[in-house]
Amino acid sequence: MKNYPKMLTTPPGPKGKAIIEQDEKYTSTSYIKEYPLVVNRGEGTMIEDVDGNRFLDFMAGIAVTTTGHSHPKVVAAIKRASEKFLHICPTDFYYPSFSTLAKKMAEIAPGNSPKKVFLGNSGTEAIEAAIKLTRYNTRRSRLISFFGAFHGRSMGALSLTASKMKQRQHFSPFLPGVTHVPYGYCYRCPYNLTYPSCNLYCVNVLEEEYFAKMVPPDDVAAVFVEPIQGEGGYIAPPLDYHQRLKQICEKYGILYVADEVQSGMGRTGHWFASEIFGVEPDVVCVAKGIASGMPISAMIAKSEVMTWPAGSHGSTFGGNPVACEAAIATIELVEDHLMANAREVGDYFMTQLKLMMDRHRLIGDVRGYGLMIGIEFVRDRVTKEKAKEETEEIVQLAFRKGLLLLGCGENIIRIAPPLIVDKEDADAGLSILDEVLAEVESKRYAAV
Image (cartoon, rainbow, N blue to C red; front, side, top):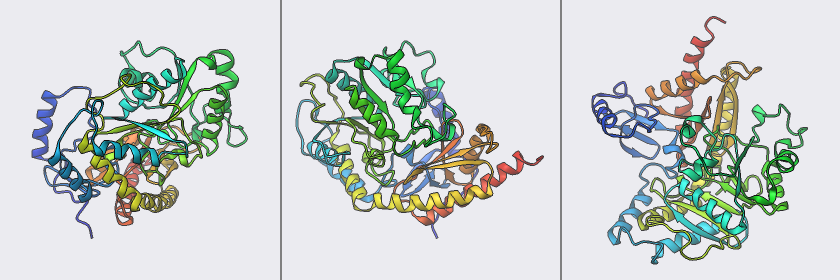
């Protein structure tokens, strides 16, 4: 029996409250703070707060702590690297871990084409690099993204983002020449059609309507797309969706950029979600789970696309030597057994969640691959009315019972634990979720 979840106080306890009070006094008002979790330490799939409460982690720092919290192999790699040197600007000089990591990232990237890698600090930076590279390579300026997309918060990446209004409000003007189109969200088809009889109209509309009437295709440098939408709601389109999208891109000489910031590094049971859909992107953007919590990102492009000259892009801190060593250790662990574990335990989660649907009418849909699973909550399965308030209540109740969850979209909760999660963890977390859903439904449907 594991020693978590274990709640000693109602969070936040007295120590937590003091830190929250200090935080609110001195930190930016832009931070969200999903719930009052004040972390003291982490180990594996366990998070302990400053008051001694122990939580089961099903959100992994937003799909970041791939190998769990403070994995011994990753910690050892960080210690070894930090004892050598902490920094030497990778834009101007060489060091072994930088080139080793670049080689590994190029080798695991989807497809067989030769690849080259640019290392940065964050997913947003990877997207910014991809915007610049695709414009440089094609000598075109326009970009296409999708409703529900989240590509980051810096101005170029934010121009592609269309997830939540508060992320964009009062920050305009954005990067010109960006067009957003509906995503392949079959549970809530924007065109009220049904797959497969729809013949992928949500993809074909790009050519039939947008290119015909609004967006000259020979002006478009790239399509930026998440193989599985993350912040938009853990939305997995049909298996042939991305293949058709890639075909259209190739027809018009448009580069296909896969944002795998949240879906990459073994989370779906594959190195990258693009592999599930049988697509080789021209450019892949990766971050979050690369180094188990150390800040690093990668923009991986086909060698034939990585055509910009020396000095056209760089980074002082991107590919930091300590972060590189953590990433190398992470890749080795994922390759050794964690990717297989993501498939096995992910299948177990899906089976149990499908069974849970029979007991809880709030669950409208369960979807995903590996340990990237979305649970969509609705007030009515026929009308699919979004259970927004109930979703937030589920997250907060679970937190107070020792289970860390995060929402995405308006009415979806993601299951995205560290890839070391086992079936015992899954049962413990699902038991709490089951209990929470029963409580929420007893209030919601009491008068029905």
